[in-house]
Length: 214
Image 1 (cartoon, rainbow, N blue to C red):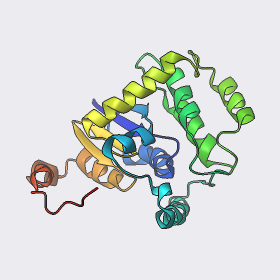
Image 2 (cartoon, rainbow, N blue to C red):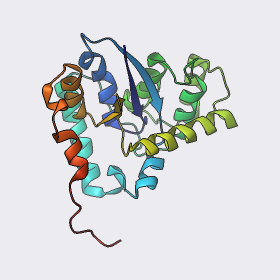
Image 3 (cartoon, one colour):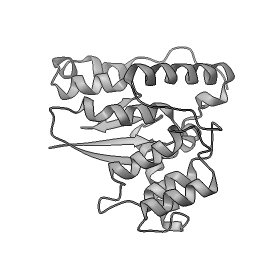
Image 4 (cartoon, rainbow, N blue to C red):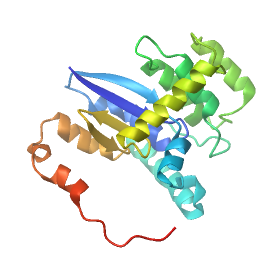
C-alpha cells in the first residue's frame, strides 16, 4: 500500500478544497493517507515568499477564484470573518490530537478546516476555539510545548523536502502542489506512462535564466 502525506494549513482555502476533493481523487486506489498540519507562514519565510493575501489584487482574485471553485465542486465554503487570520492555535490543536502515527486523523482535520471555512465566523474567536477543543478532546495540551515543537518540526521537515506551499501531497518522493495538482496526482496513481518519462526530472534541470535582484 502506498503512503501519501497531505501537508496543509487551515489558513488556505485551497487546502480546504483539496481536503474535500482528495477522497474522490483516491477512489480505486489503496493508499494510506497521513494528514500533516504545517505553518504556511513558516514555509513562506523559509523560501522568501509572500502569501497571496499579502498582495492586494492577488488577495481579491483568490477569494473570487475559491468561491467559484467551491461552487463548481459543490463544496460549502464561506470566507471567515477575517482573513488572513493567525492559524497557530488551530494547527497546534491538530498536533495535540495526533494519534500513534504523530499525525491527526481525517476527522480531526475536517473539524479544523470546517471551523475556518464553513459558516463565515471568526476562526480565532476564543469561545469557538474552546468549543472546538471540547469537541476534539486532544490527548495533549494544545498550548503546551509539545504541540508547539511538533508543529515547528513538521514545518521544518516539509521545507527540507521542498514543500513551499499548501496544500502539497507527498507520495513516492514526489510532491504535488495545489488544488490543481490533484489532477497530476490522479494521473500518477493511475499509472500514466508520462511519469516514467524524462519530463518530471528534466524540469529540475532547466538552466536558471535572469534573476531579479532583491
